Amino acid sequence: MAAREFDPLRLDVAAFAKEAAQADGSWPLAALERLADCVPADAVITEADAVNWSARGEARPVRGGEPQFWLAVQADARVPLQCQRCLKPVTVPLQVDRRFLFVPGEDAAAQLDADSEDDVLALTRSLDLRELIEDELLLAMPIVPRHEVCPDPLVAADGEGDLAEDEAPHPFAALVALKRAKLN
Image (cartoon, rainbow, N blue to C red; front, side, top):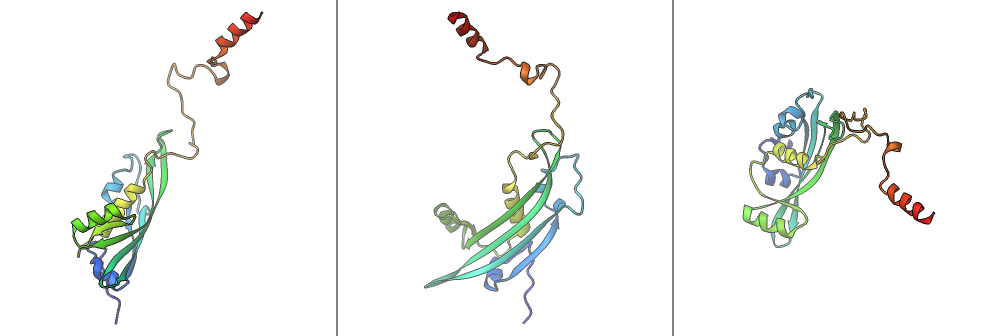
């Protein structure tokens, strides 16, 4: 029997997990609108900018009950952002490796999610995997994107930075002078 094809934009999670199915692919970065909205206006998103992903379903047996449906998701992307130090473009690598437990109903998901270390979601017959992956990539974004070492040093605005570091007054220099005067 041939493996069943699953649509990642309308994924039947229970069937995917029961078959222990696997899927993978790549979406253009521009197809994930909320993630693409984080890219600065002057940055160019090319066809090479893509989100690579994979998903694996698993049905874990539960003694005396229905099996638990799990979904393992991995994704990676390189997103052009703006460095918050130098305001120049910086490409930030994002990676996601998450596992989700799916349970029947929003109430059960909310209750279990509060009590569990695992991510718990309500079981649906039509999960938009691209939206779930986009959510996880957005959560993986740094709060303050920046270069490890900025390519160009910042230029101080007029009036700022007139004193070289060695010429800057030291905060306790006046106290040292007072102490010397008192001792003499």
